[in-house]
Length: 576
Ligand SMILES: [Zn+2]
Image (cartoon, rainbow, N blue to C red):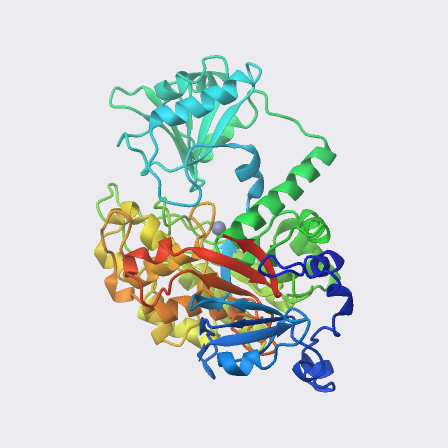
């Protein structure tokens, strides 16, 4: 990529004249074996020394220094050994004893940059932050002032348990925004929304409207609508009011700018590889071409894109080291963990009448879908939260392997939240790769009382998975969960939330294990463990410089460690 090479800079040093004089890039595989190691034939592009390097490579777990060339690591070792490689055109970076780890990987992210860039955000997408209902009203009023009456005024990233007011937002609050605009506030979890009276009136919803199947119009103690609407009941708002219209060109431009924007956010938090749950494939390619893609994309297809992969014979792994087809996007088998609809084998504690969550597909439908995708050579990926849904998915995959055996297929389980011994044994036998919630253990403890400690001991079960030899990876599920890897690591290590409560402490893992989960295990989940995920000669030079060492700081402060620098393919993409 021309623009990438032209931006080959480190530490603010200009690399003028360097890009054109680069040695042939490190090709890897059979081709590289036929040429001399690059460290002998050319100066490294970069030598980093005087660092505490945690390589996540079990053959050499620690180093003080490393060298990169052509976007790849070419050597690691002691500061003295690496300094000996420095040549005339080598840039150098004295890390002054800061910590360096491989770039982080998020294996489940909806990567919706448009919302972050263009919409009114009434909650903090990235951190635990309590806001007031007054601040939500104020932000939406400002939007209403520039919006014609009758057109929707909408707020995003609301979290009902992150309000200083300690009560639910309601229609009367949103009537203070406007009585002439329909107003909606969307929960970041994606299953509940809050509306003002104008919106309810336009949708012809009254206190006498019955709840439709799969959703509710919530009411207060007096039976009046309170403005909270759940799941499928929200579809009545789709056709009412005016929504902004965009030309195809405008939509494409928003998609591109959205991807470029979220890519910057990923870099800011140290993510160098992200598994994209869908999104506009054209926009991702165009953003890369213009030099604004700062992270590597494992693209998870559904719908039209997945169908064209199957019909044209495109399998997982097609693409290059920047944009590659990964597993499918999450094929949904059950409901949500944070919004309490996942499918359990026992009733939810303290819910009457007894409720066991939602299974959203029959075993037969699931079997057929899994077999079809598996036969096409595409890595299967299902969203399964509850033990019932995980069992259904494993049953479908065991069957697919019988009718169409494929070695090392690595079925991906998105979320894989509530497990038991039998499920773990079957996952291990199939070589399944779970991508489990990461930041929830810190961010969402206010929602765990709905499950209780007995179930939380078996939820987000990193300890159990690693002990069983299963390569569990990290899946933030942004936007429902924040994606900051350090917040995720802190939660895995402490199992203690922002509110000081601890849930399922038996599932704690060590700092080193948590870093592995967020790096090399993520690479394994997309079958790229020989390409990235550790600081190993020959792998892509993706790494993160941290101001403090997560192994030695107070465990409750891991999430606050400053990301000093994020580097992808030897190029700095973020600098504090
Ligand atoms: Zn998801």
